[in-house]
Image (cartoon, rainbow, N blue to C red):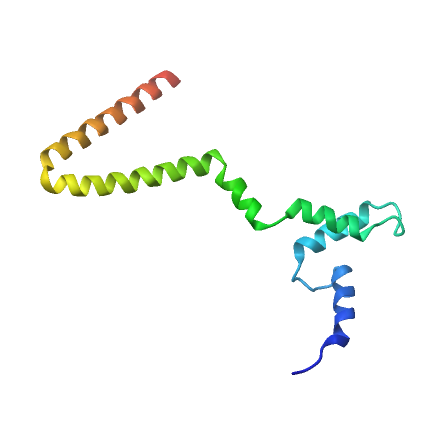
Length: 124
């Protein structure tokens, strides 16, 4: 195994100056923007910048929680659960009573078409 420790300092310096090390693009953009907003190089505080970065981007878990609380995710989850349950119910009931299932599906289809037709009529 080779020791590449002598390259570390140059790699970090190149990365912080924006020359090619693309492993941490988000942090690099954050670092450079914080560095530019500081009025002088002495005023820039790396520790505060890192704390702001951690607060801003946090962990992926927080992002998942935010997505899972959204209305769109709730609607999609409800739709998928109802779709799965309806498919399971229709297949089991349809095997024993196909005429009743066909009648229910026809009524649902007509009701959806009527609702769609009324909504289009009110838009005009």
